[in-house]
Length: 134
Image (cartoon, rainbow, N blue to C red; front, side):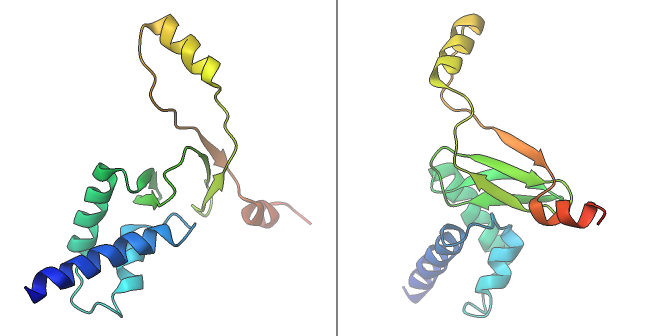
């Protein structure tokens, strides 16, 4: 009985770790963040729970950045900017594809569009400063 309670607390802590940050963390970041409070937490438990949260629609995957999957607790439609130098992932709240564009594409290709993911790639402001000669 106690084991189930621990599992639930860990599960809740994993979800809260993702939802309480805007850095779009990796599973490794979640694991390292929670390990001091949950010494028996395993990386496998983190991965299993993140996968389940994705399947349940509680979090989204931003994709793989520098070899690691990144997660977002904000499931409302929004765009991401991914820095090709440092790998930071930044939320951009604007919509870049209109509903009319979705309808036009759906009609042209005889498909149903239920979601659109837009990502911008380039250099973030900090990397841009480092790469720009003075």
